[in-house]
Amino acid sequence: MHQLDGTQTVEGTVADAASGAAKIYKFSLSQLSDFNLVLEGMSADANVTLRDRAGNILQTSNSSGTTAELIGTTLSAGDYQVEITAANAATDYRLVLSATPDLAGTANNLEVSAATYLGGNEHDTASAVEFSPQRELVVAGNFGMAAVGTAAERSLLSATLNSAGQIVRMSVSGQEVLSITHLGNILQDMDVNRASGTIVAGGDFGVAVLNAAADQVLWSQDLGGEVKRVRSPTTAPSSRYTTKRSQFGAPRVS
Image 1 (cartoon, rainbow, N blue to C red):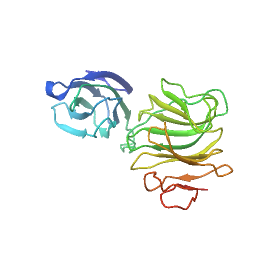
Image 2 (cartoon, rainbow, N blue to C red):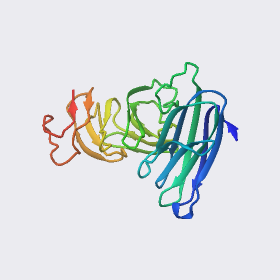
Image 3 (cartoon, rainbow, N blue to C red):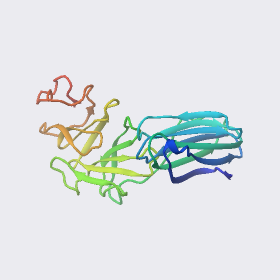
Image 4 (cartoon, rainbow, N blue to C red):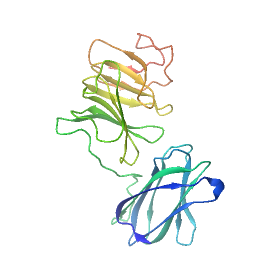
């Protein structure tokens, strides 16, 4: 059993539920700590359970599909174990565990703490940060260089792969870049629909609504100038989108 101090990442594979197999990771804490867990990178549904030394269940996360599993709590000094189970099919996964001494005796109420680099040695700016319904981190901004990662990269509308305006999708732990989408030379604002995951973005290209994977334009409109603020539509994009910005279902822009 190893002592958890800081952040540790483990990658592995868990067999399907029919095999009865589960992956167990044991760790110990030397003092009262704010504990966070992320299970991500799955190709099939998997769940995670946090147990104490005696095997009693402390917390579980059972999100459907490949949505990341999250657990955040405060734990006393002692021994613990994390149990990973697959639902219907074997799957790879990435398990990120972190523990921070809770010196004040109060939790910070943050499920995940992570940091990463975007852009390069140019003048980079982030204009908006959102979480998708699948718990992906979506960052919009203007980057002189593409984000670093083994991600799908594409350009939409009139943009090229050299266009600075980018929407970057990242895993919830911030350890994997999922995709990079170039939109124009200036991207001013972005919002994510909490129900559907569709993305609305505004900039020198006007306003555009993208699907949740940010690889398809569902609707767009060039308004003859930069759009500085946008707001996600309350309904999914459909044929009701027209050039009338006030039309019900269209994104709000300014």
